[in-house]
Image (cartoon, rainbow, N blue to C red; front, side, top):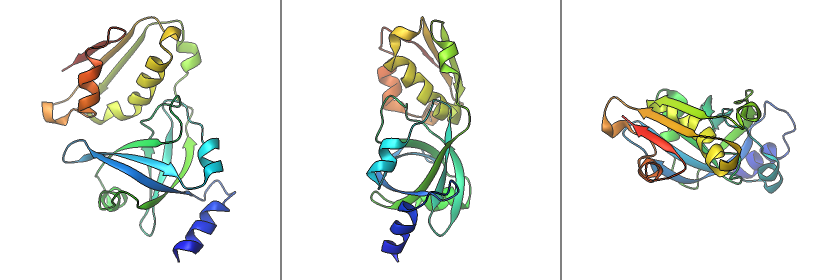
Length: 185
């Protein structure tokens, strides 16, 4: 059956048909959030996948269903699609039971994304709370990877409790950067 699933996903020209992808890493963020690093199985699909900061994908857990998830990885770092997911329903609950090397489906990217071209040459203020950091992370790293294109880059990120901070190790490094004003509350 798995071989037939792979063939069906690979041959999909239909925009409603997901592309087969593999979970290559899972990084727990807290009790209810995990960062999934996912790679497309088909090399051509992986090479042609282009997202903009602020877009999302439809994530399929085979045999369970699909749900929209914001892309957390920047387009400046192709090859891996990072999705920060909150366990909230049937599909995300099934995803949380998956392990590294499990297969899922992805289709997209969808949405207009942020108008980064219009932002260039200006100050960039990013404000997020809790899981709101997940879609902004893509824009933040895009700006830092293209630092010369922006004037000041400022991040204000808050959570109700310190244990709810997502991307904790990353945030610890961001507060020490000279090219970013990072304020965590």
